[in-house]
Amino acid sequence: MSYGSNEAVENAEDDHREECASIIATKAAALVAAGDMSRLDAISALQDWLLREKEASTDPSGVLSIENVFPSPSKSASFSQIRAIAFELMDASRDAADCL
Image 1 (cartoon, rainbow, N blue to C red):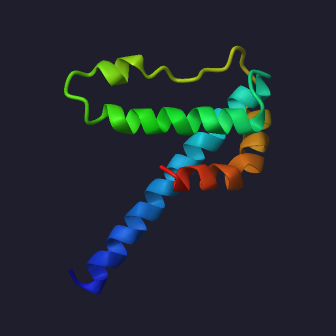
Image 2 (cartoon, rainbow, N blue to C red):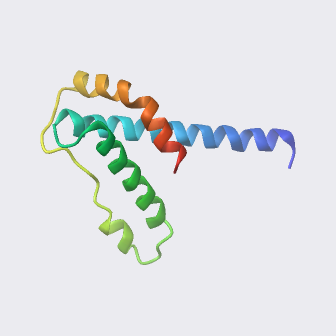
Image 3 (cartoon, helix red, strand yellow):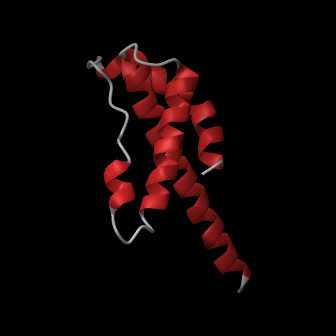
């Protein structure tokens, strides 16, 4: 592989990690805003969900995907509250995304 190919792969991996971190932060913020979980528990729950979703993508039977339940908040919160909490969770979410 040439240098350009390696750089393209690294850029794609970085983009994927940032997308996963954004998903973790936003969805964890909704759980925190609803009062369902602490910040660390919410990040951990979303990280586990993404790991199981990754495993489910290789399951030919589709059972893992069905069993992988997305952690949903028990009540809704304002968009601005979720956005503010998500902003605070981004560093921890990036760390969690690095482990995926």
